[in-house]
Amino acid sequence: MTFRRKLTQSISVFAISSTLALTACSTNPVSGKKDFSLISKDQEVQMGKQAHQDVLKKQRPYNNARLQSYVNSIGQQLASKSHRNNIGYTFTVLDDPSVNAFALPGGYVYVTTGLMAYLNSEGELAGVLGHEIGHVTARHGVQQASAGMATSVLVDLISKKAGGNSKTFNQLGSAILSGYGRKHELQADRLGAEYLAGVGYSPNNMIDVIGVLKAQEVYASRQQGRRGGSYHGVFSSHPSNDQRLQEVVGAAKSIKSAGTRPANRKAYLEQINGLTFKLSKNKTGRIVVGNVKTAGLTFDKLARKSVLNAQQLRLLNGRYPDGHLKRGELVKIVK
Ligand SMILES: [Zn+2]
Image (tube, rainbow, N blue to C red; front, top):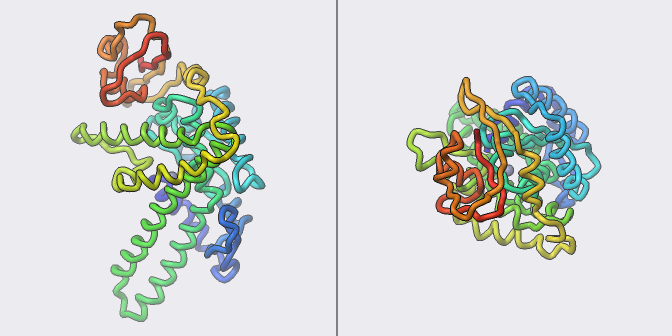
């Protein structure tokens, strides 16, 4: 996931200044157990704050206060039900056409306009935010950073002893890190589903949103020469994890408030009506939400009014690869 790459970049400055012996263990807010982490809570929050400034230097927040406040309000509700409601959370919609979401340690969560365009309900948005909050509450970022720091120290020591064959040891280091990745993604899905249920949404919204992202990957891989989606790459390379995904998400269904709140498709589509994003260097697209008034309206007919073709419109509306339109429902196109 792109999040990890960005995180390690922002951490490298921090890693140099921190003292390894300072905090060898700290309590994990999710498990309640001591885990191996070289970074204290205060250091983590400080690190997140700095990295947040770096993100904002590179990427522009989407210039729409109403949409920012909508996303923030859903994020704050989820965060208040999380294992870690004693830190402040900041939710930012980034003006970026790529389909992505990521989190930094200390409670900084980002979602791109590209991803916002593809989501079909408030429940799905909550699924994305809940998953990212899960990375923060389980301290995945700091665990990975700690592992990275520890590994590089280890690599340093061993390679000196072994006579400088550091390449093999570096490969070992990255193998450990990618192992953490798979485990952490599934845990973030489990936690996200719990937080969804905690505020009343159905945990199934988590499965729905992964479906949206999977469809993206399938579509991209069918388009030769196009870049594949990276948000949930973990599941595309390991589809056998799906059963485990059903299990971890299913566990949240026993939470009393689960499913008491609708996914709010209409409310979400009204919020993103008019959302703009770059289609290419000189071309800006705009989401337009409309009502399917006639029974005979098809994605092919709709494509005549849009810059997207019928398959891309299916993808945009969560109907890929062969879904149809229903009379009376809302549908989005890009103009
Ligand atoms: Zn993730």
